[in-house]
Length: 493
Image (tube, rainbow, N blue to C red; front, side, top):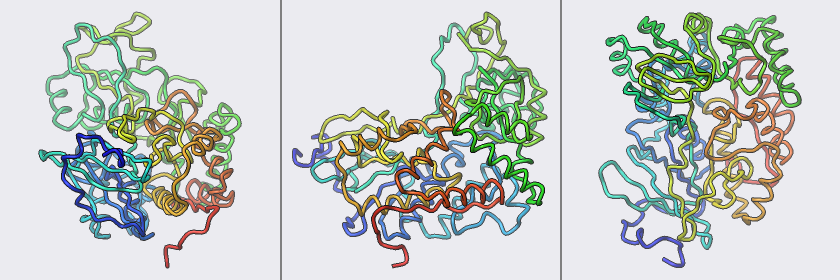
């Protein structure tokens, strides 16, 4: 136990049931959403053995019945959420539409079936702990399957935490004597909504982002329930779906190119960037008026959703306490309600893992990541959600290329990783996806991440330009092409 760094409480667990593969490297993927599934398949194409541990009974992550909420749809067209090697549909009209959560969940399962991935996916398996040994540079997992006793799995060369929205977040405010219903937006299932509507409850949706907009649209469109108030600190900008995901006419492409140039301006002047996007009609506010660039997170609404939202009463300000009759705001006003829905974002959920390093608890999970992926003080842990290589599951194609390179270059010294992380211009931590951060401008951070990849030599300027033009102008989604300073084995070999 001393030599491996495994605490005594793990010594009585069952032996690892997964065979070792020292040639190709072994990777454990925590999370079976679309990014995890694409990563599993892409790693297999590199000859790297990998498995997925998924805590729920179905793959799909956000799109599974466990995590999806009433009225959830893909925010973008289907083509932007498609897997590599499996177009969402043969019909361009279908590819340009926004699939529902159920349709996306079925599509994820189709990807598993087509690529015969099921035997590498462990459903109903929750990873409780990760134990890292500096002596071997390997990790061992403590995994619990449903009602069974926890067991040991490993060793693994790398543990990839592949979750964007693993843990719902709610603000910490005084509840007072509020006796009504409180739930996070992820908990608004059909049965909950039906009960709220049947009892004609007054609803307050708290949160100005995409989840909040989805809640408003779901109540208005699905049930016609009108006793809804949207509470927000400040309204968010949203892309106009019909403008951004255009019909690929010459005029629309020219306008899209102008929007892309406006987006690039965010790196140097975020306020000018959001003003330009608003000026050309690419973004809009559902209520109010401002040009705060931190309130734009690439959220998208179509014209119907905008029309639903504009008919709902809004309250701008900071909630202070929950009282008997509703939400008391900081300005003293009261928002009457019987139900509070917190549409206030997520953390990745990595904080649910207990991390052990050489037998001692490791808690520095907020540290700046190395290469926007690896935790320097716990180098066996990679956060796949924080390296925003691309939109949709195809970002994992690039993540797999990085993992192939990382495993071939061998273990790095922790002090070198800390110094490398310090030099990055954009801050990332494994606990929070940049879309759920409100203190900085997401678009500026997103561009800064690409700048870091370029400065590290992982990406050429041509690769970024190609990806940006294909996605924002031509309506095509291809993986971002990466390059590395060391030669590594080609996938075709």
